[in-house]
Length: 221
Image (cartoon, one colour):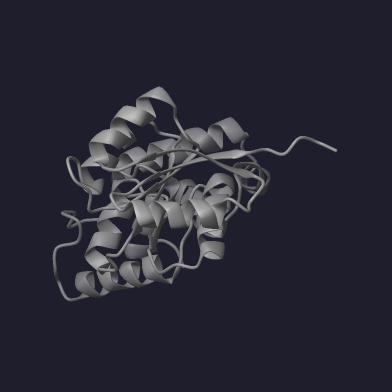
């Protein structure tokens, strides 16, 4: 029997009771291993520099360094880290802000442990996890744009080529790099390069952020 591919998980939250609850809920999953916990943003930044997890469960409101500043620091240093925001805030503006800054998923603390587990696996396999909260935030921004309000500081959408739009559409359909490669007859490395260039154009930190941009600007059906 092949060895189980264990996902290293860490949690940053200033409430010990909540951390203990999450650890207990996830402890039944043989393919997850909780490697450390942090009680605030400063503790988080220190511990991740010593031992990096695959997935970080992180609150927004924390002492010393809050989640907003923490994700800004983390995305500069750990591009492949999967960050799942796990918080009490369900405000659409905050959801959009955190996803734009590089979160791979956004969950509230009332989320069922099974969905947290699903989000972890999905982020590892597909880079991001979109739930109804995130979808509603995207739709809210679309309505703001329709009403003429400021949309993330960008009045004119970035222009993509026909090939880039096709790749964006396929990403929105959950296609992998290999699948996209076969569909549009380009090498996986070329697909990855184009994808990275698209992220750079819009300032997205993750594929999820790029897809959100495409959805807001009606580039993805």
